Length: 163
Image 1: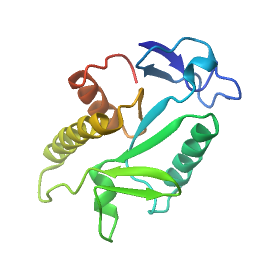
Image 2 (image 1 turned 90 degrees about the vertical axis):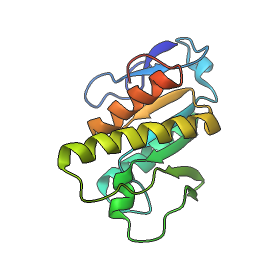
Image 3 (image 1 turned 120 degrees about the horizontal axis):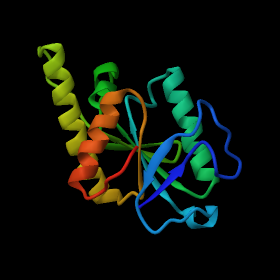
Image 4 (image 1 turned 180 degrees about the vertical axis):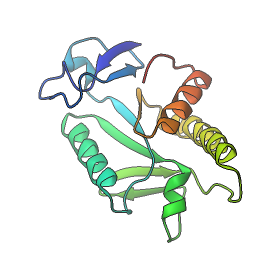
């Protein structure tokens, strides 16, 4: 595993809030050529077809990753289905990107119980999607529950390191 930065150190990158530490699983070195065809699994709160600043920023990140020759794939947390009124599929393609869905979370739970179940459900789904997609990198987007689920799942699928 190689620690690299998605904000500093890669050609064409610009820092937003300083370097972002990510764990790259696989035989990647410090040279950008080693990152060609990198498959990135983005763990998201919600995504298109919902409209928000979060979804449009995410779309820009996915498009930039594709321009670099990387293969971006996305997975949304149960919060996506909580906000989406329409039918939900296990996986859908939007704009040429694959978006995997985690599914709905049972309602009527206390806040702490809901957050714990959301984290567990998302971690399980990360494991399932990782078996299908075999990503080189797990990129957990905000909020922190996505990071916790990614770290949990990363440990289960044999990936360790910071996200």
